[in-house]
Image 1 (cartoon, rainbow, N blue to C red):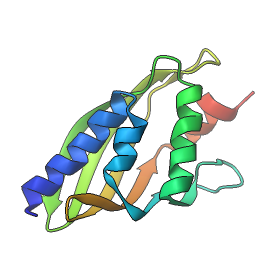
Image 2 (image 1 turned 60 degrees about the horizontal axis):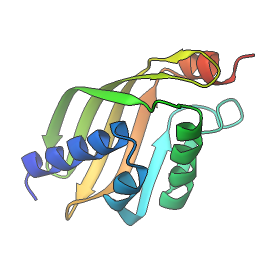
Image 3 (image 1 turned 180 degrees about the vertical axis):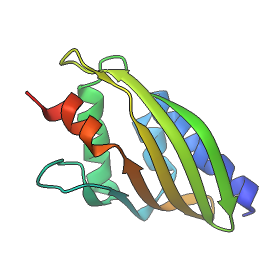
Image 4 (image 1 turned 90 degrees about the vertical axis):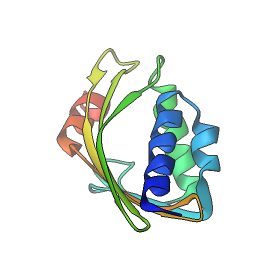
Length: 134
């Protein structure tokens, strides 16, 4: 696939996530896909390496705490070969009454139209303050 086609795959994945279509997101991922999230797992449970099955649980757990979903806005995307870098911003109201509004950078590997790997960088202090801090 071309770089532009790979960028379209990445864009569609985040569009589906923003629409609350977790099954659709997972459908776009290869069976052996991995998703890594920056952070220390002992401080932020979603941090670290995840298989497709594990990231599905993370997504579903997040969705349960976001009654109106999580809107993702793509701020920019660059593709070269099978790599796609995407800048995003999220916005959602958590069930604890806090507003989750984070920024992300993801580096994705896409082959044969499927997401093979995602490396996600985000503001971990904001995650802790909105999701976990008492």
